[in-house]
Length: 312
Image (cartoon, rainbow, N blue to C red; front, top):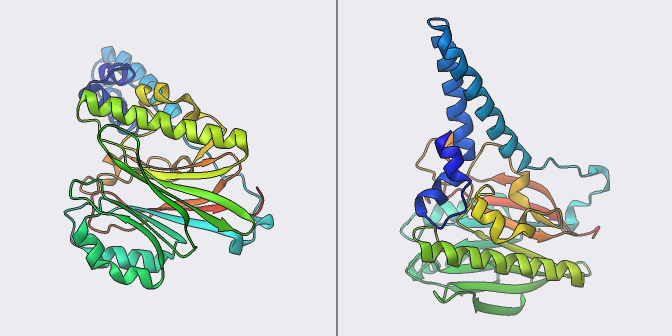
């Protein structure tokens, strides 16, 4: 109960921020405590209060987690697969040297656009062959886990590198044309919540993302923002940083992912993982298929999201 309460506090503390990310894990722990108290209640009736309290907390956590995910409601008979746009998001981990696993995963899943994060010069040298099938690209390597790149089968126009904070974290963007639609794609990687300054900067970047998507909705423009945003859906700080990211006017493809599954950290058992990846889109760009990929040697699993671009 204590960690549940602490996790809902709006704070810039590293501990509070981390505790607020773990709603799924609280759900699993709640189940274990409920079972344990239920067993003990057969020995001593006093433990019935523990059963009730644990069950209530577990139920509240289930509601909180479940409500953060959305079920697909797409009429599949109207879909034309050739009109879809498939995006692959990969946080490759700078120190990871299993370049062949990334190349294999991209070849197997065949996204139209691959967004890579944490790339340095070694990474770019070792995945050069990617350009044979993805001749349109933007590369910005760095050695500090904030290098980023986009590879696309579709021509990229209006290519830009922007900085959204005083820490000079690069954000890359480009426009693509799919059918008669122009879509602007952003690749962003926010700072991790390891200090008050980093948490504030991450939240400012989240606000920036929300404002871009809000403005695009008002202007009837089409935007997708993909990246490791170093937060789950659950923190109060995240919800306050940008309420619009939780509104129906903005889709987050990861809300359509399988419940109670996560992409980070691959060193953890699956039930301990959380999802820090997000692929956000304006109201008219509806996700129609989302899933996690295979381990490529990184601490993050790849994410693949498919969008319909014919009917908006």
